[in-house]
Image (cartoon, rainbow, N blue to C red; front, side):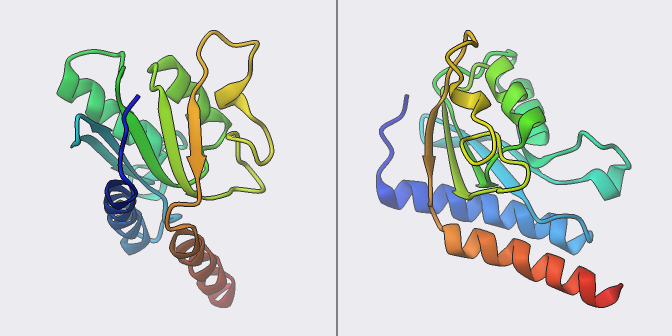
Length: 157
């Protein structure tokens, strides 16, 4: 597991926020993700369900796929996943399957979160892979992006 400084964590979460804004530009839920290994981003992703018309194209899935290609391996050992919003059940399962040891997320996801808010799949002792979790990095900015998106969406309807 990496020993990132607070400054590095903030930097990588800002990179995840850049990815989230790519989703926003395509009128998709603004969630972004980067995967870091040895101080380098090896995978990036953002929600692309609307763009690709695929329900599973969440930010974490896209970043995991990119990191797998970068590494030439399905195992993403010694990496850290940064995501703007707490991972959902599907993404938490994928994180475990990819053997990512550490997740750092910005804001909680009270409706779909599987990193401690609603469920805690990432640290469930019944599973063979558990993840170190940290939350709250740029939480206000991450949450605000989501709140603004849904507020604008309700206004359009």
